Length: 441
Image 1 (cartoon, helix red, strand yellow):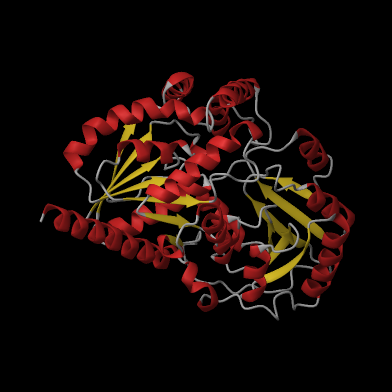
Image 2 (image 1 turned 90 degrees about the vertical axis):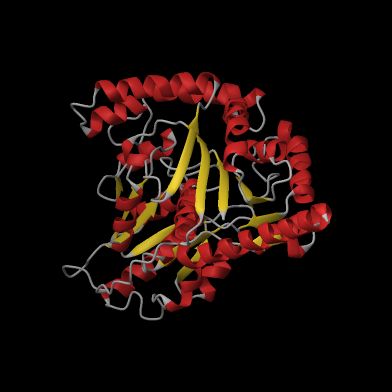
């Protein structure tokens, strides 16, 4: 089967949605499918990039507008520095400081330009990619003649692109999260709702990551449950590693790790405050950027908090396995479960989840599989749990009542989830083929 994926977020980007389709396209190609991807030609900092999966053909086109000019400049800078690829120089070319915690003036300029464009363009500045993508598809579609088309959200512009070009090709919308979400700017909420409704009405099938999102779409648009599949984020299994609960010395530190970006709906302030208030705890943070106030708080306490800056996806996964406890911060919306939680499952280490409130699906998932502990995302609640975990580690029983094996979370392996995507694609393509055959007869 020939598959054409439309995706703004795809390797070398290493965003959650790019990683999702890195693994799905890898699994589909491994199952013998002819996988093609249309994606923008973006220049990514080496520390944030991942390679395209083997066996997947990627067709690149310009990201369009000012974004294209910015990335052309980045490519020239990278080419000029090819003979001296020191990490600090590569980071500077990408607009970041050496430790990745703060953007330099170039990074701030690019961010400001992006914010300005996003104010006037729906859903944001990535819509500059749509005209070049449409032109590329006019050439690609007659040549490829895909059996099925996939639109990968986010950004929402990819869904609009799929609606515009699909013709009679069956297509699947991988929404992941709702198009109209809690963080959608007020000026775009009407557009987001209209696009979401049209996708639910016209796509042959819709994929989401949580049952809550499926229920939300069914309620909003009277969409049948049979047309919406729940396929969550996943992890790549590398085998559980047994580590000693007790550290080195009489009073070992409890080493916490957080990897990923922070957002307004995923605030690290309470975590930072709690770590600073509890002795015997050290937090390691791998994130490309921090809010100035949080960054200053961390830098003022280097004995308690270490900022690791930008790390590759591979390096991040390795660090997850080497720490005592992995920290996950819940989203405020009940329709969303952070993909980081599933990635943590693959590290086979205890997880401390900071809950966003009632009906938190991530908390339910964590406790159901006995992978760690949960508490409110508040300084006092976090501090109390941290004190208990310090005592447990010193007693050599940190994870005694947890199940950190593979069996309980095996259903979330990318290989398993890729099989679900494979079956769904074949069902949609087969149904569309039968429909066309019946119509022609």
